[in-house]
Image 1 (spheres, rainbow, N blue to C red):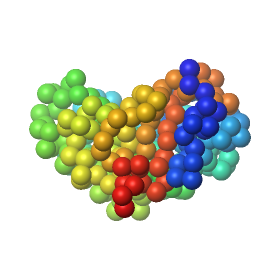
Image 2: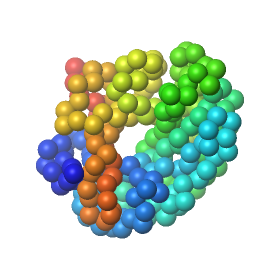
Image 3: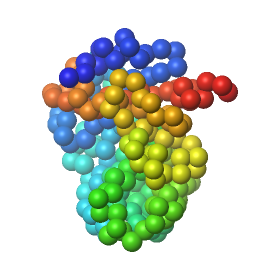
Image 4: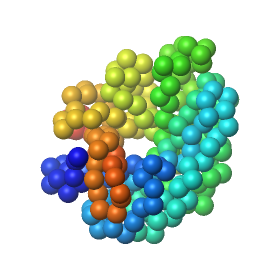
Length: 218
């Protein structure tokens, strides 16, 4: 267990905000209690794609979560678990996401979350192709007026993604102190977090408000 209160004392400073990311797995959330516990932002799962070429399945708690978080004064972003395998897929997904969030104040990124590496051969893509798909997804998101971002683990950021091509990266690396040396704006540092207002575990994230520590020379 990682207590959110401990993370606040350890990681909160003038450059950081601390938050969480949630989906249906967290169930009903008391967003006012979450806010009182010090959570400043949340990434909320909007939907996931049901495999390559599959339909989009909206997270059944999305509307409750985004309404509750915004009403409590918590900044929100959204993420979409994608199986996109072409630029056309990327455009269609970004357009659909816009249709779902356009009436909400989504201040943080709309995140491209592609993790199906065990099935990568089935996608019939090259590493160049998946990078292009992600870039085009983000481009389309930003044409709709939102911020785009890429989510990935340290391993795949180092081995597959062309990280220089992405302005906003959400790093997943479950550790007290990441040794990832690339740039990132958000860091998902654990999936065993505990915060008031949520029953059970939740992911804890750190937002480097003025760019990550890797930009300290600027």
